[in-house]
Length: 128
Image (cartoon, rainbow, N blue to C red; front, side):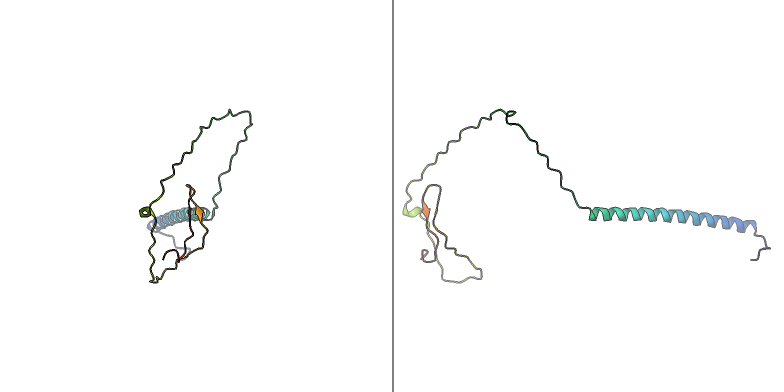
């Protein structure tokens, strides 16, 4: 079209509708772009942010502030079991077969139990 030809009313109305649609689309796309960038920055902040340890609070008290706390006496009474008979003793079964699992056999010294009796250290010759 050249400059000396005037546009018709229909063409001007159609041009105005097209400009309105273009402006609406541009505004909505820019709003969605800003929202998307904000969401992306928020997610990056969540992933990158290092959680802070809560501060440790300690209160100093003076010795005279607390009254003496009564602690109940604990009586420790232990009963010794009667002497063990041969039927109550531990019996060990030894096998000659090998297994795929490695079993450690430490040479530990005898240890005393609460009753004062000592168990001998385990050894392969003791099991036979």
